[in-house]
Amino acid sequence: MDAHLIVSDLDGTLLGADHDLAEITIATLRELAGQGHHIALASGRHHLDMLAFRDRLGIDAHIISSNGAWTLNPKGLCLRRHYLTSEIAQTLIGLPRPDGVRLNIYRDDAWVIDDHAPGLLALHDATGFGYRVEASPEMSAEGIGKALYIGQPQALAELESAVRLVAGEALHITYSMANSLEIMAAGVNKGTAVAALLDDLGIPADRCLAFGDNLNDMEMLALAGEGHVMANAHPRLATEVPGARVIGHHAEHAVAVRLRERFGLTPAVS
Image 1 (spheres, helix red, strand yellow):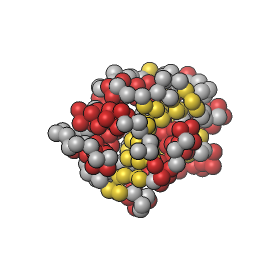
Image 2 (cartoon, one colour):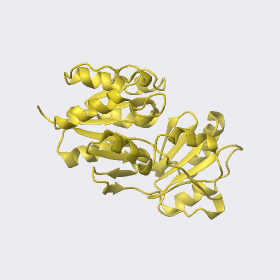
Image 3 (cartoon, rainbow, N blue to C red):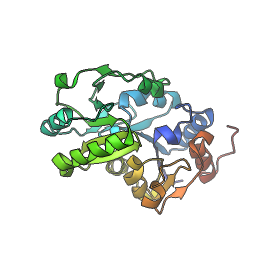
């Protein structure tokens, strides 16, 4: 059997409603890795936040983090990193923000936020990864792979317009959730990261299976020979990637169910 690359988003896709891996998901990916298939986790999360999931899987898995800003090999070595220019990063740090919008920045070794946001930490209970608070004037503009604004959708829409006005052509702008506006350097997204990884592995795109649920998965799903959109996905995603197959809900472990069906694995009880 030819080796495939199986790449999945985490929240809303591979992870359940508890933001953690289910036993059926772990068992399925272990079986597929044992058959020689390559596994990659592709998320908007920081790579230090993603390591706990890779360790739980107990397999060699690549990590694509911060929507493609970093790619790590199964040994944890960085294959590629893409930073915002310091000039643009400084512009984003200093850009006036609507009340209640929190600025987050991702560096090689840290998640930094401009003020406390306790609600965010609940999403990371399974990994224990947390942020460090720095007031905006104290934030360095160097070595930033992703800027993330979290707030109400209307406030983020206003901020997105301002960002596009000052630096839109130099940026890749997307959403991982309705309340999460994500900004990387132009050309940095999950799709370009997966394309580079496929080249590394010598696997054609038609032997890539990809799974996602939100707008930051769009390029990855469009690239893959077998793209899959979750039933709980953003309503625009299936329309934007019409060739993708709609599968079940992330709370019902639909990625594992689909993979077991696709590769003829013995059905497992979830």
